[in-house]
Amino acid sequence: MKDQLTQEQIDSYNENGFLVIENWLDVDELAQWRAATDEAVEQRLGKGGGFGNLNNQGDPDNYYARVFTQCIKLADTHAGMHEIMYDPRLGKMAATLAGVDGVRIWHDQALIKPPFGNPTAWHLDNPYWSFSSRQSISIWVALDDATLGNGCMWYVPGSHKTARYDNVGIGQNLSDLFKAYPEWREIETVACPCPAGSAVFHNGLTAHGAGANMTKGFRRAMTCAYMPDGATFNGTKNILPEEYFQSLTVGDVLNDDTINPLIWHKKKGRAA
Image (cartoon, rainbow, N blue to C red; front, side, top):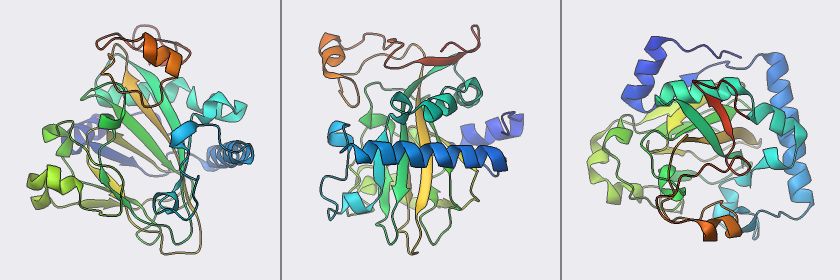
């Protein structure tokens, strides 16, 4: 794993709101990530879901179901995925890029674009979540070659600097986000095709999307969203368990180590 960041990479992330690291995993690590993801997804779907309204496969003919198969919090149910996601090297990289002392896992997520799958509309990540932070960050790892033909990631560089917390859903109209942010229409978008094993980090307020999968193969990705340690509740439920959600008041620190484990902190090293 290429877990050492250069100052040039950190500066590029800060400027653009995303960073591509090609061939981030070596051959053996990529095989491990692929096997764990495939097993964890098969296990989850084979049990009929179990992740509430974030299981987007209730109606397989629905437009959104054909954007990608979405399986969240696989580390909670699969030992191999737990080992991968709790690796403190991932937390250290995320914290370093975000410029924070420590990070907690918000949730991991497999995103598998099916053959001839629909495009992923432009959107922001952080406004969906239960905390609001300009330092939120995600890692997106290509388990298959991500190409212009099968739905690689696209970004609006620098959008994280001027983003508010306005957002749109991932619907059929790809450009809905630009109704909320018309000023971004003038920014040249950037495609990020990359070989399998590459990692793409992006800020939770960087506008991004993905093209359609025009091929007969799957485009698999494994991702994880990170919350800066010390982030507070904003009133949105998202993935929070009902009992925990009901116990919170806006402004409470989200520091439950079972739900949002602290995986790396500058002063503590690995914390989970």
